[in-house]
Image 1 (cartoon, rainbow, N blue to C red):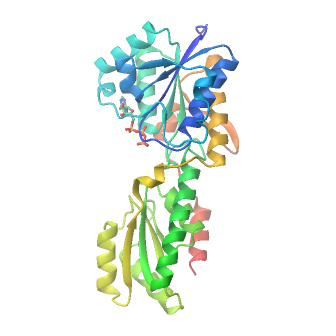
Image 2 (image 1 turned 45 degrees about the horizontal axis):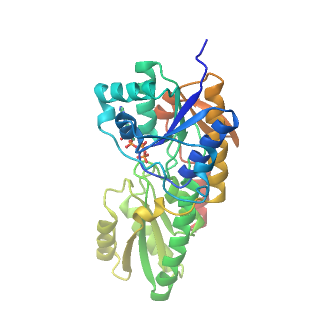
Length: 328
Ligand code: ATP
């Protein structure tokens, strides 16, 4: 029989994303609802190793549902990758009487949680918090929807200046391994081309497409480029390449960078965070462990952490087709 859970720890780890605070709030309040103590762990796994803990009651999370970032801070901990670091973290949890953990982060965070669970049989539950939406087992990660809105808003503004000066803009967006942000925001903002890591468009086809676009009467263009695009050139090299080969184009580059991670979470992300937090805590109280809580076919569902880590989130083929048709 699994141990009765009286105290749950919660942490945020890896890159921050909008909606993490709403998830912390949900975990804290669900614990209070079920008369379970909740402990906030600062700076992810590093705070676990250093015993940086704080009791959290339902009022300690007032007024954070609308805030970006994470009040618990986030960190990338090299110490947690060592057996000694994890041993110290485990000792701290046991000494503080914390019976189970909710970790909010990306696949690295889940990898750490799974290793920790395997080593100590310690109950863990993951909530996917990353803007890249690159986690298997959930249609949406926390922060992804907000990031899409941020990117679309930025591209709308860039389009104003692009069309006033008849310019071509390469806009680089986040997504080292996954093109979800580029593809969705690109369609949403009406980009002429979208370059993503999952597809190698090739330089020749890019030039062809831009030439076609010019010939069809478009005077300005936006090309959205995912950080991890496979075309083999970074966004500044792309600019040079196009200027050399299509001198009629006046090309500019805009790298959106960290602004994509910030800002107040969208309503979608706040609701998702609230749902995932409730499910994470209630699953732990039912004796479940080593799962990620995600959104699958619009329902909150559990996926084994191992699958969430190893599986890849596929790009939607239908969206690729829609994007092709929209650039006609
Ligand atoms: P993002 O997708 O935003 O980068 P992430 O959770 O993938 O988020 P990482 O920096 O990869 O971010 O991982 C967060 C932390 O998880 C690491 O700093 C480390 O402490 C822990 N971690 C990652 N991989 C391992 C591992 N193999 N063993 C133990 N801990 C790990």
